[in-house]
Amino acid sequence: MKSPQQLWSALIARLPPLPSLPPLPGGARLWVTLLSLGFLLAALKGNGEQLLAQRLDPQGWLWLVIGVGLSLLSLVINGLAWAVCLRWFRLRPRWGLSVRAYLSTNLLKYLPGGIWHLAARVRLLGQDGRLLAGPQSSVATPLALAATLLDPLLAASAALALAAAVGWTAGWPLLGLLPLLLLVPRWFQPLLQRLERSRERQLARADRSAEAEPAATTSSESAGFVLPGYPLLPLLALALFVLVRFGGFAACVLAFDQQLSLPWVGWLLGFSLAWTAGLVVPGAPGGLGVFEAVLLLQLGGQVAEAPLLAVALSYRLVVTAADLLAALTARLDGALDRPRRPGNQPGIKPGIQAEA
Image (cartoon, rainbow, N blue to C red; front, side):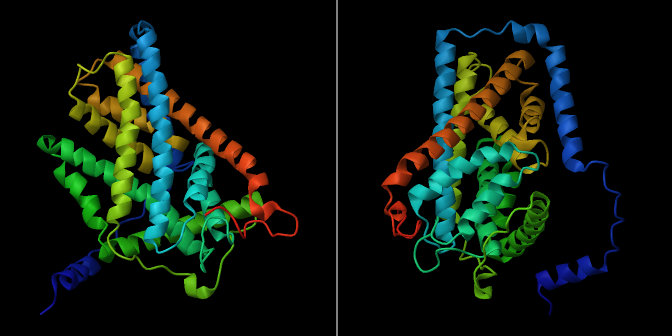
């Protein structure tokens, strides 16, 4: 007797192929960006006078500064979570250098294409002795890509799980549970491999167009990767990141005195869904426009649009300032630390005795 999985595979094989749709002119990313920004501009035009009437008192400005600090802290936690993802793949990350590399490359996500921060991390993982310690101090591109792509995938899963936890009365439990079920290695392995191959082709095209050197690879034995199990620890680390990220958003809500307009579970639900959409939906780099549009669609019927727009726009400024501060601080720390590292002394090859 055939198993349910075999019956399902046979049923899928008998289905007629779906007709292929012609590609959109300019690509889906351009159209999603235009639609999101168009919706946002329409909302700004319709609420222009009310939006200009929003004023910040000194306490409100203080809340925005706190929001920048919380957003900066969330980036550090995200860098640590990326190192946890590397450790979960049985690699040995240099924790301090991994966080610094994450922060210094994070700003590249705003460049057109939205892949340059991933490309930079993959190249760093492919350079011997830069971010990894031990015998396997560099990895082949497929494993480096898988370890790098695991971070946003788990972050989106954690955000949807939080949305399901706080929005179970609104019918979100299945939406939050589905990504958690897909993380079971039996299903997650082929999904991650397919995404890794797609990103590898995209990075190869970007390398050729930029005339950059491809990421370093090691022997063919490390060309593949096997998931070591269910990624529970990286998932928990990224759930903490999303919660602290929400703390920066909550500071913007408090800055405009909107904390009584909606229960905090409602704010967390709206933020989690909008942040996930900005992360996974192809659009402008950094989720610009997508996050704001989804937030307005989700919470627009519960909160007045003008204050909600003020919260969304101030949050965009807060996280952008945090991204800038994180990248500048990481690069300044790297510049100050370089003369002190033994690898930069005469007669010693750099990177061999890098910080553990």
